[in-house]
Image (cartoon, rainbow, N blue to C red; front, side, top):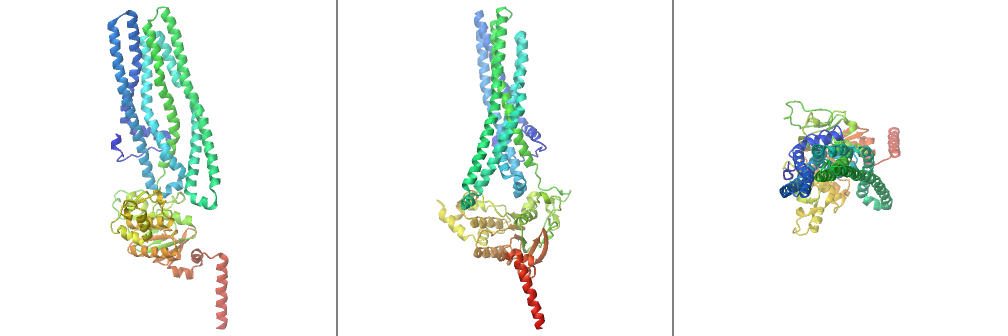
Length: 603
């Protein structure tokens, strides 16, 4: 896989049973790239390992005054230098390719999971953790995949050096063969402690990131109540904890790095001392001593890869564990598609067995819930995203077909849920409204139904270099340059353009004034008059426009009728819609009773 071929047509199905298994799965997916990187790494490291042989031959040729062997040593050094240069360039190229392609694979997997779960993702996993997984964790995972092939090449090279030195000069070679494994494994006892410290650092960093995200998201509210300094103090304290944990972790890694420097130095001293004695005794030649000395000195280059892979694994394993936890989240856990059912077309009434809510096809149905959280969970269920507490219940049915049994793409086509706080992506207004749609609703019609005239005027005035064309005006990230009501209506227009068979709107007019709300309600009713529309709201202006209204009380649909019918005959409905208190309802009930009694006496 090359970078130019990204993104993957199919990133695959990951092994998410643990972080280590996820890393192994990634390694298998990158097998071709790992083999290429390993081969180039071997060329690079073996070229370095061969330099001592060339230097030793050259020194011995000078001692023996042999011009032919000196020329041969020179040619050998040139060949080795060329191999080192080519291997280094291609090793870096292939290793970075492995890093980028692995990171891209993980990001595609996370994007696919995000699209599959929708808003349910942040209800199952903290928003800060999602941000950490999709940014820093992806980089750390890619780092381990990239370092793996370099480590393998370095390990093979060290084995070759040990075997070669034993064959070349047994007396010194045995010392090196015993010392090199000790050097490579010396840091293993320190790795668990270093890993724990790194985990603490990442945990504190994740909490600080989540605190920062929450602070930025609620900055307008914080300014309104004067709470900026309070949250700023909390973030300062959290950042200091991160700094302290980072220093604590860095000390351990500094100790590991120091060991990787000190121990090779001690081995080098031992080889020189022992080799000098052998040379003085005439048991080895000077060139052989230089060769062994140079080989031991250059092993430091390969040993650094042992430190790197230990650090990469220590950092990437918790990151892989978090990524696996997110990727293990499932859309549903109830049903599967039976063989031969893939062609079934879901159409008709929408029915939720958990609450008893039935939405007739082609009607504008309003649903009233006293609790906004209940309304949000109901909206998710109607879109095929049951909460964890609802996972054991039967899926919502559309025309008798469980939404769980539909492929995700088909479920998204027939049912669209607009959240209470929809997100606008950066780009032009035309890009915002360029969504998968039936084609039956034009952008102009959707904008008119959502009463976006003032939004279009504001965008046209703010446009630069577009000739006043609002459709070509760029919208900032999350629509921050627009008011809450303007963002809400643009999101509604986007949903109307999609024109799904079933449109579920959760409080679509909560941020607009009463006059605009009435106009938007009329626009929705007119544009969706032949389509199934569900609005979860408690506004009388919206409820009065609905063909039918359903009251959901304590998780069950308890009353059905028009807005005026329920207002007149259902006290629980009236309490939610008119915001009457229990005392006011009791007083009204007593007043009605007394009036009936007086009428009876007069009769």
